[in-house]
Amino acid sequence: MKKFAPSIFRLAFVVLLLSLAQCKTKTSVETTDQTPSLKISLAQWSIHRAIENDALRPEDFAAIAKNDFGITAIEYVNSFYKDHATDTAFWNRMKAKADSLGVKSLLIMVDNEGDLGNPNEEERKKAVTNHYKWVDAAKILDCHSIRVNAFGDGIKEEVKSAMIASLTELGSYAASKNINVLIENHGLYSADGKWVAEVITNVNMPNVGTLPDFGNWCTAAKWGSTEPSKDCKEAYDRYQGVRDMLPFAKGVSAKSYQFDEQGQEKIIDYARMLQLVRDAGFNGYIGVEYEGDQLSESEGIKATKNLLEKTWQKLKP
Image 1 (cartoon, rainbow, N blue to C red):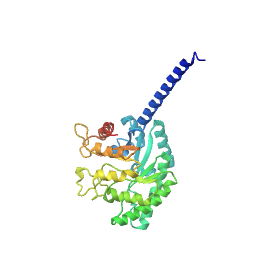
Image 2: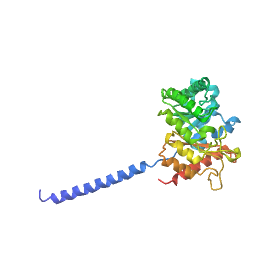
Image 3: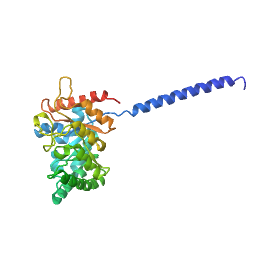
């Protein structure tokens, strides 16, 4: 035994070194995996003109997103499906199409179903009930959320109280379907990031959150676009607004309007905006939502997607 002992010790020493090297390598991989990745979705509003002009069919949205833009996650707009709102067979077909293409349905943007912030109790409750069918459709599609608006005629505190009541009722129904309800900044009071944060905090339900949009911060107009051509008279600071809403975000909307020759958005500082998103620890999808008219919808979508990818790579960790 004495004759072979040195060889055994040398062998054990080599095995120990190899084990330490493997541990070091594994730790390095785990650290890399923790770096947040960019996940891009496509908002259907980006092709609304083509749909409205009958150049594209809303039923083909999943195929359009994947085949034309290489995007495999989508966000629907309810106004394109009004005639099918309660048609279970239709939504099952839509889900089957998306599944066959490997496209994930994320949410339905719900407009024009009544004001959830209406101080009139009867009208407010009617608006809540009107949203139920879109929760049901989202459930069939396997979405995680519906997006709602925070509109209502009245002073801030009145609309705030109505929104809290409505989101509590709608959120309870949506929770039974495992669906989230998200407020997007869309003008008027909803373009006040602090006000939205107060509403969400008061509701205090895990499935009630936000969908911060890089645009739509005009506090003087409904729908609230802050594109220069809209001539907004009063606006909330877009970066502060996104910062206010990010703690509750379950989605982010990357609005875009105009691009310069270097591919940068002329109105919105994407580097600043995306750094806010990353620093907040957000790890969901960022939706491309082109709303400009200087480029075609197709080219605008591609420009926005390219800008997201290019900018994300350069962000500070």
